[in-house]
Amino acid sequence: MRFPDTRTKPRARSIGVLAAAVACALGTGTLVDTTTTATAATTPAGGESTAQQARVDNPYEGAEVYVNPDWSAKAAAEPGGDAVANEPTGVWMDRIAAIEGTPGARGLRAHLDEAVRQAGGDPLVFQLVIYNLPGRDCSALASNGELGPEEIGRYKHDYIDPIADILDDPAYSDLRIVTTVEIDSLPNLVTNVTPRETAMPLCDEMKANGNYVEGVGYALNRLGDIPNVYNYVDAGHHGWIGWENNFGASAEIFYEAATTAGATPSDVHGFITNTANYSALEEPHFDVGDTVNGTPVRQSSWVDWNQFVDELSFAQGFRDRLVQQGFDSDIGMLIDTSRNGWGGSERPSGPGPMTTVDTYVDEGKVDRRIHLGNWCNQAGAGLGERPTAGPEPGIDAYVWMKPPGESDGASEEIPNDEGKGFDRMCDPTYEGNALNQYQPSGALPDAPISGHWFSAQFQELLANAYPPL
Ligand code: BGC
Image (cartoon, rainbow, N blue to C red; front, side, top):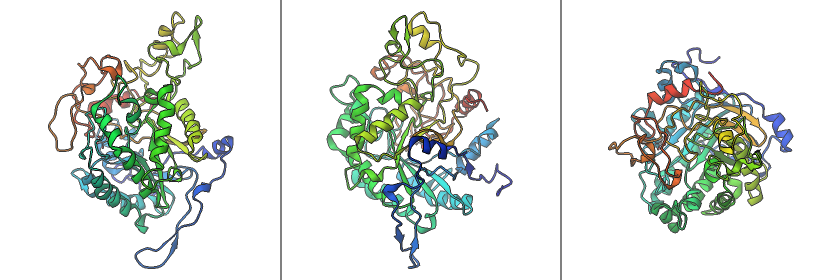
């Protein structure tokens, strides 16, 4: 061990490697991504040319993953938090100021310098969340951002360009930089626009002005030019785009973004699902193809005709659809398992009674949300699978992109200078809207604004962890 005192000096965390066998099973056993094998020569400031390493097929394979010391310190300060304080979590660039650093959160260069130290010369993945689109989070208010709908110029030149310049520094060329690109953006242009019942004025606007598509394309192109950057586009989760009318249309809009503003599909290394969401990784007690007394499970009110009942099957199915759309056949998926554990004493130990499809599903499902569309600080949730490389075919890694313990949104209006609004889906007394079919929000009370530390939620995530800690 390089750093004996892991509490005060986080060390990069090895997340286990199962990928080689998996890659072979998938028929993608080559370790090198054939789309990006060309050795890129760069000329660093000193003038001498160095050979950059080619991208590998799965950046998590054989690598450790960066532990964010700022998150780690908060987790370690909680009772019981030591059990997970050395897990790797995503570093979120959620506003322009985050690049230089904000109170309590170091800036991008400081993170990368620390990452080089944690790497100690070995392969290391650095997980960076790109999250600052104009008109951000158009269907909700809790994570609205600083840029107005038309501020695509600031997005490109004050946000993406400086990030790209830093990532391109030869000092960081040995890191494997995984970027997850624009959470909760493009599928909104499919699901939350006119003439859908769930249409939102800001989503209509972002579809009409094209700035989500343009911004994502620009980010993919700029970041994809850096040989050690691995772009993963955010692909929602099964409880959002798992329905037939959202699934293909989302793949199409991802492809459109990946061919806009200079981007090409080879700028996309893969996709990430379930970022900052709560969808169960696997429902062990029922399957989408099951029937009860001849009635298909898809007809239950929980499943509601979705084509998937859990995140692993969705990620694998969507991967196939994306390849069919024109993305490279060796793209890999990431699944955010930071808060989809659903353990604790209320976790069902077997299938529900086969009285009706609803009893069978409701009493057997491990995802204990009131409605699949609930997304804010969900009561009863636990930490999910610990970060793991290559856990299943087609999956590059389970990751903790959303840092557990950071709020999804305030449960009441709290003035702030981060552009964050108050979304009633974070209010435990709210009775819902068309997005969750007018069900209660299921949110925990007394939550701070999104991104701020929420101790009570962290404690519940520890208690309900699955697998248990
Ligand atoms: C917030 C961001 C925060 C991120 C990670 C998002 O919901 O809007 O500000 O960095 O969560 O916690």
